Image (cartoon, rainbow, N blue to C red; front, side, top):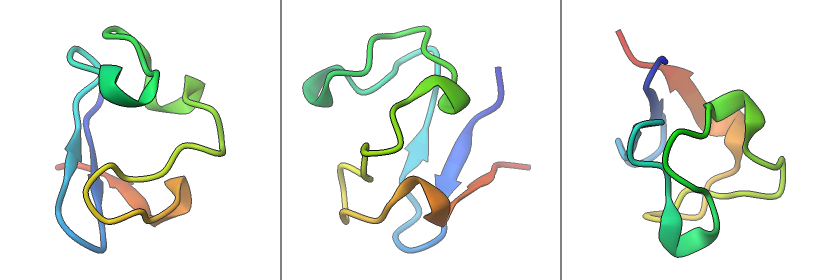
Length: 53
């Protein structure tokens, strides 16, 4: 699964880790995260993330 990086602050969402503190279980693909999820570091929306090269 691809990692995604926040274009605002540089936080990297790693699907293998997820974001358990915010209700996203490990193994959750970025595409499967609810649209209401925001970056845990800066609060930017999902639309502020890009695929990490």
